[in-house]
Structure formats: structure tokens, C-alpha cells
Length: 430
Image (cartoon, rainbow, N blue to C red; front, side):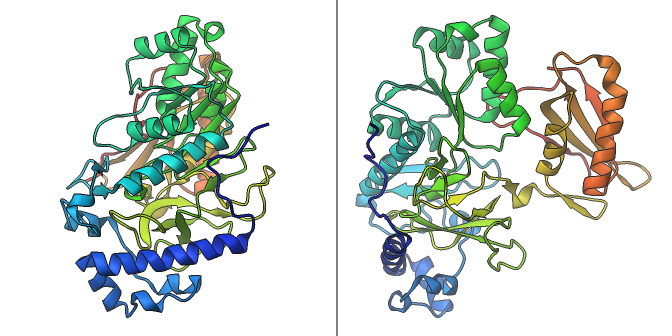
């Protein structure tokens, strides 16, 4: 019988709320006393450490943004003396200054504990062999997956990203049972295993995806090529420790998040007012135990929704939906706000279409914007169906999103694959 070693001990929602209130009070006090920046923001909002009497007081606290982290570079929002900092990590952003986060030993220990909880939620055992094919270095990815795996007690195989020859060799030689990677790399690996005829020579049972959203078509293709039993989504960001802040269980009804380590709100990104359970909003997180750089109502820019009701697994831990995109992913095209997932959802439910696509935006000499959607045809679908597929997709885009797009159906495998995150949108407008 499986035992819970890393799951929280509370049994009721009220016990969880008590833990959250205590953590919120500690975080506000710690931030106020430890950071001049936080002290100024809290004072301007008229809130002090002694003003947090209930969880309702969370709404009185000011928001924190990525700008707060960048402006304080290189050690923003630090709330402990430097002699307590044992590690730094930085965000993987590609523009401007990196968001650098400092960690105390307790922060690292807490991260290892709740990351091990992820593997426990996925029902791994000490017999599992976990191939970690994500980035190592100043980023939180690789070291986080490895830290949690070793804490949990399974075998960690720190492969790093890319190098398909090595990844395939490890799958065969080490008989890895779990693969941790981006969904894009998972698809690339699945196609490579299929091309090399290795499906019957590997022992892969589960895949854990982080860093990017994956479509149902993408998952179906990987499941077909690899024969895996479960695919899990693992959220996380450098600002909030790193990956491992939640996981969906084997019922896959939403991501259980570690509400004893942080409070999750969803807000309308325009009005900043709370969204109701079941409604899509921007994730806002407040840490409850983080020492080095605590977060107070940090706007993540990630979009999701809080899920009501209980999970069939019986866990008391609340759930949010898979990440549905980012507020800065939004495309404004001819006055219509579009998220890539809108196109993704249409393509994923179109028979005869594979899971890879691109959205190309151009502005021509007439001053008008034009959208081209390139979608791969399914691997065994006749090219004679291209025109019919194009018309079908264009019609569905027009009816669903209320814009016109030129749809080009291209050969299977003709769009580039990535070992990291796949680039989907190419905006060539001025």
C-alpha cells in the first residue's frame, strides 16, 4: 500500500485556511521588516504586519510585478542577510535584465519537499528511473527536478535537454520509466523513438511536462508513439521557487497545487478584480513560507482557472486548470483579441491534422493585417485532402474567432521541432 510521505497532514479546508492565515501573517511581517521596497509598498497601501487578521485581508495587499524584480536587480526584494543566501536562480526570460531570486537553505529544503510531493502525486515508487531532460544551470528546471527526485528516493538520470542520440540510448540502456521535459521535446523524442523502431525496447510509463502548454493532439500523438500510461503537467516559475508547485493526479482532473506553501488567486488582468471559480483569470500568487524573496500577490501573467468540487483521488488539496496561456501571448488582429490556444483548440479537434502549427501575421502594402495559419497534415493522411482541410479550418476559425485566416496545410514533419519551447506565433507587423 502506498504511503504518503510528502503530502500535508491537514484533513479539512478549515485546517488549510488556518495554515494559510498563519503563513500570510508571517510573510507580510517578514517582507515588511526585511525589505525596504516591500515596506514602502505596504505603507503606501496602508497595510502593516499587524493588520492581517483574516484571509480576507489578502485583498488589501498591493500587487507585485516582474518590474519590481527587475528594478531591484541584481538582488531584488531580498528579505534576509546575504550570509543566509545559499543559492541564486534566474528566470529564463530573453528580454531585459533577468529576474534573480535568492534562496535560503530552508527555501531549498522546502522546494525539495514539495517537489517530492509531485512525484508522490504521480504515484512513482523508489523503483522508478527518472530521465530529466530539462535545462541545467542558473535556471530552476533541471536542478529542481533532480532535487525532488532524490528527495523522493527514485533514480535520477540528469540527461539535460536535446541530444536525441543520447536520450534514446538512455531510454533503452537505463530503461527509464519517467521522462521529464517540455512537451515540444516530448513530441520530438516520440517521433525519434518511432523513426528508430525503439518503442518495444523502452520501458517509459509516464511523462511530466513543464514550461509550455501542450495540446490534446500533441499528447495523443506522443501516447500513440510511446505507449505511455500517464502524462502530467507540472507548473512552476523561478519567482515561486521553480517547477514543482503542483501536479495533476492520475485522474487528470486538474492540477493539485500546494496551497500550504502559497495562496493562489485568479484576477481579471485588466480590472484586477477576482474572477469566480471556473472563470479564466491571471494567476496571482502569495508565498507563505519563502524566506529569501517572499512574494506578495505576484502577478504571474499565466492564465488559468480555479476548479470547483472535489477530485476523485480524494485529495484535500485544491486544483487549478492546466495553464491556458499568458496574458502577453495575446494577439490583437483586426481589432480582435486572440490567444494562440484558440487556434490550437480548433486544430486539435480537426481530423486529419497533426499537432504542429504556426501562426504568421503580416501587414501588407494596403495597410491591412493578414493571418496565415500553417498546419501539418496527419502522418498518414493523403495530400489530396489539403484543400478540404484548409477550407474546413478556415471556416471554423471564422465562426469561432470571428477573423479570416489563410490556412495552409503542409506535409507532416515539415514544420520545425524544438528541444525547448516551440515558437508558434511569428508577428511580422511593424
